[in-house]
Length: 145
Image (cartoon, rainbow, N blue to C red; front, side, top):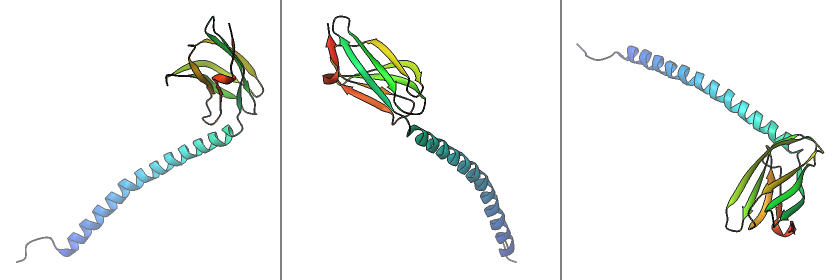
């Protein structure tokens, strides 16, 4: 008398196991594919929309007496830009982030007046669109006292 599993039962168990694994991974793969597809679509739409964005820093003046930097931010293109912030880069390789909490429609301008340290190297404005920013070096900023 032989002991062990018959070849027929072994094949049936192997097929059942394979189908079970396929069902589990099939559901996960479907969910993962939909999620990834949606993420790619959202990022692509954002990049396409942001391609029509433009922003400019204008009329920057540093007052050495008060320590304030004033200037104008202008939306120079055709989409509304939000989450507009400033970054001040200093000579000692540090930076200061200033949340202006403004949104600009196409063609709209807004002014700012912020206290900063005198050893600034450059000023950058950035937006909710990662490729839409402007930067001005200290040599292009007027100084008054």
